[in-house]
Image (cartoon, rainbow, N blue to C red; front, side, top):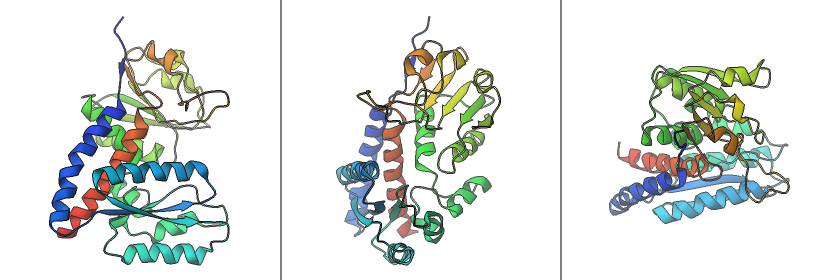
Length: 285
């Protein structure tokens, strides 16, 4: 039996970061300091940890970063005023609105107000519309990271049957569109899909992005399929995060699979940083 290839996102993310360092140095020589700002809920430990990790790697590359903490006392007007300030600040090249914000705030309105030229996470309606239309623009960081993994490992999507489990606007839907751009035949599955296991068994490329720990079982996998696990779930009693796939069981049939952790996650951050550098370089355009 052929050994399953582990699609190493950590090593690829390291290569992406290394490639960004000379580009950042060149920008600095021309008087431009790339900078990303995050808007994050101060009461959400997971969001704070995620933003801190992004800031760590941004600093390693040479990108400056900052954050605006949103609390239970922050009003919608204060949130929108901060988005306006970041939109108009020429020193800021990328803005990340870290989901989720407190429930009393309208996150969609804040995203609508964010300019597409600074939407380095690629999740505003403008950015998503450009993806649908096939126009240039920033692509959603997680699906972009997944496509970089596929390209790096020379996984050809053309003519392949792809199934994406999950229909969120930040992962499932843009992932399906980006696979379609690579000439895959794509099906989006969701909570109302009938006989999900049978559908998954038809997939040459299976992307699990639904946020349910180990939903995808080993006998759901078509022999030789490529499995992309984009889930990160906390499970009581487990020492590390758990994906949406049962990795050990799925690996018995898959030709290649992304591990959790160490697969999609590092490439999400690397793609966000790459988009920020792209945004800074566009100030010359």
